[in-house]
Image (cartoon, rainbow, N blue to C red):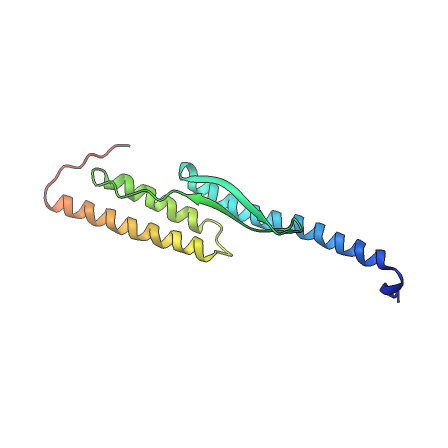
Length: 132
């Protein structure tokens, strides 16, 4: 057995190797997760941002997803966008953060509001401007 105290450079080398391994492993895992959000978000998604600790190891990431406001003139557009936002928030499928789940919940609220508006408008016999 090698006594590490007698060979301090061995400990430094293995520590450097571990940091490099974590950099690659964490970056790959975080980037993959955020790329799933971005791909599903389409035009509603922002750039992938990865955050690093002082040793340069990636520790987290995010993609901003624009949650549209309720379009009273076109609830179908809002419904479509809310569904897209929810798909984007849940896209990675696993390791979902609280932020991911909060965005999905916000999209659900918007979706419900738009569906309710659409039903109310149809009951009142209003004509909706539907484009697309």
